[in-house]
Length: 114
Length: 115
Image 1 (cartoon, one colour):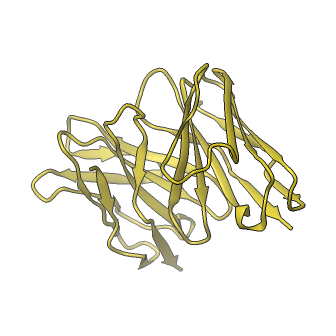
Image 2 (tube, each protein chain N blue to C red):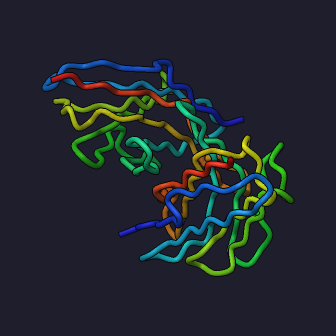
C-alpha cells in the first residue's frame, strides 16, 4: 500500500533562514508525489509535484522539493523563510488504484518567527 | 486557473436535518471530484471519489446513505449530509482533478456545525 510519512509535527525557523519540511514515502513502482499548503480555515493549495524528470522540483512561492529515490524522501525546502510561510504543510502520494486518489501525510505545521 | 469553489463556506444546522454542500470547478472540467473530511489539527480523511455521471466510490467506514454524493456535471459535485448529528460537525473539503495532470485542486472548505 502507498503511504507517506511526515515525521515532524512542527518545524520552527527564524525568518530569513532556510527551511526544510520532511516527507518520506512508501510505494510500489514509481511515485507521484505532491506538496500542498493549508492556511487556517482554508482548503489546500497546490505547491509542487514530482512525476518524473529532474530530482529538484520548483514550485510556487519560492518552494522547491528534492526527490531522493535511494532515501525514499521528498523534502520540501525554501532558501529563505518568510513569516507568511507559516502554515500547515501536507505531503501526498498518488494511489495507483483505479480511484487515483491522493494519500496524505499527517501534516507538518511550519512556524516562522520574525 | 484551476479554481474550485465551495458553497456554503460555513453552515449551522439542527440535529436531524440535511445539509447540501456544493463543489464547483470554475475554470476547468473536472473528471473526478473528491470529498474529504478534516478534524481539528488532523490530516484529511478521504470520504469518497466521484466521477461525472457515475456512482461515487466510498472509502471504507463511510456511510454512503448518510453522505450522499452526486456528480451531475463536469463542473459540479454535491455532498448531502442526511439526518445530521453533532458528531458530523467537521470541516469538509472538496477537490477536483481535470482531464490532464495528476494534481488535485482544492476548494476553500465548508465548516459544518450541527447543534
